[in-house]
Image (tube, rainbow, N blue to C red; front, side):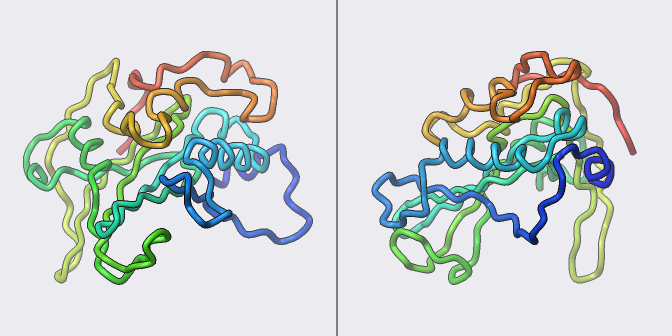
Length: 224
């Protein structure tokens, strides 16, 4: 982050501004005028981020996360979009002390988490039932940095998980991170298939002229 701030070619705003996630609704008939379709919200959020952030770091490493919250009472799904420069994937609960694969870690990353009843109000039915939250990558970067969560926390402190994670040197399939075809108005497998330089708002640099296949990545480096 510090390197990006130093290299950012966009001058800082003259007035203090607060970054907000761009929200979207799965229902086109939502009564809230502030909500737009998921595809439009994703593109709007990405354009807004690149309007404020333009550097070799953002060119290479910046993607976009989609957070989806599903209401168990009415089935409504709301979305929020935020820029990302890396993702942190957990070890699957059934393999925390044994071997696993990076693909399984990515599936665990995209699994739904239960939100306790009362902590989230559905924007459609206005109830506060149990809701379910999941994460997907709605826009992939040129270089995808994946951090593996190796620590678990409990009443007696933290514990490092020592299970080995296997990964390919070439053609890592990141399909588990993509939104499902029914999500985001068909955004899965479509939006994010390339890095649209019109969204980035600048002429592509020599490091960012290659079209990206969002479903596979080759290994570049490993850090411990």
